[in-house]
Structures are given as structure tokens and as C-alpha cells.
Length: 213
Image (cartoon, rainbow, N blue to C red; front, side):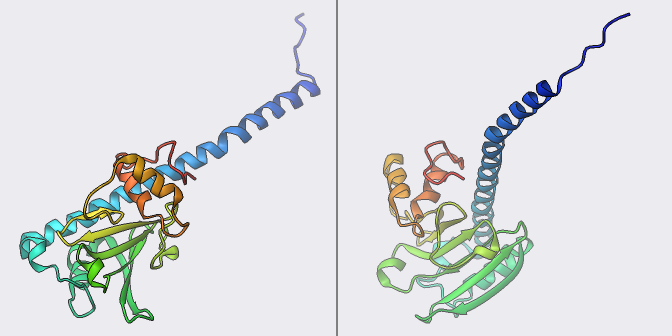
């Protein structure tokens, strides 16, 4: 008759303890990696959707530089025309309001749960190269103007030459090291270079990205 082999209570507890330690060490990293992948996917999708909207509009209206006004305000109807015609299938709701400087802001909720707040700079210095700022948020509930922390909210810009880009580098794109340092050292709510860094790296959040989740 064979002797039955069984684990002692101490052995079971030790095994469970080891499993618990391994889980505690690995699960947070797995969750963080998943969140970073979601961020990468949403940023790349938003960039693609906006550029597709521009291309579709150019098919009907000609080159964007010929119809993009110097200042995109409430009267120009450019935002409304984009929303209703070329971004319609991606949108769940839109609204607009005026801030304390009488600038019109547009809030747009997208079908994947993300969204953006957009407005056009009113100053001549800014509008010479930037036509509109888009404050993209992974969760529409967190959308607000002038917020781009490089974690949940990111800055995109519609340039005067018709390019829709990550960050606001409409004139020239600095080196990766310059962008990295700008992302790392900027004010917590003004990390415009962080969007450029992610795009520079092929829409990936690299290990040296300062604000990994």
C-alpha cells in the first residue's frame, strides 16, 4: 500500500505567501503597462481621426490653408463644420461656452469615452503659427482648457499651415533630448512637450517617459 503524500499546513501557508509576494510585485506593473497602452492607443487614434477630418474637408473645400481663418471664433463656423460633418461619427456630444476673456471654447465628447476642449488663440503672436489648441483628455469628464499634464490630458495644435500636430511645435521640432527635458521640467499642468515626446517615439510611452503611470 502506497503512502499518501500531503502538504503540511506550514507548507501551504508558505506557498500562499510566496504567491502573494509575487502578485504584489507584478500586478501593479501589469496594470500600469495596460494603462500606458490604453493611453498610447487613444492618443494615436485621436491624432489619426483629426487628420482624417482635415483630409476629408480638403477634398470638398480645397487646401486647408485657403479656408482656415486667422482666428477660429464662434462666427467662423469652422469648428462646427468640422464637428457636424467630418467628425460626426466619432462624437457623442458637443457644447460651447465663453471664458472670462470672451474666447469661445468647444467641449467635444468622443465615442470611446475621451474628448477635448478646443479654442483659438486670440493674440496675433500666437495665431501667427497656431490656429487652434486641442486639450485632449483620456476621460471626457476631465476635459478643461489649459490642462495638459502628460498623464491624462495632452495638448494638440492645429497650425497655421494646416498641420494637426502633437504639442504646439508648429515652427520646428526640437531634438528628442530637448523635448524630453521640456516634458520633465514643465509645470504640472503645462506639459505640452510630453505629447510631442510620445509621438516622437512612435506613439509609445518609453521607459524614460517622465510621467509613466
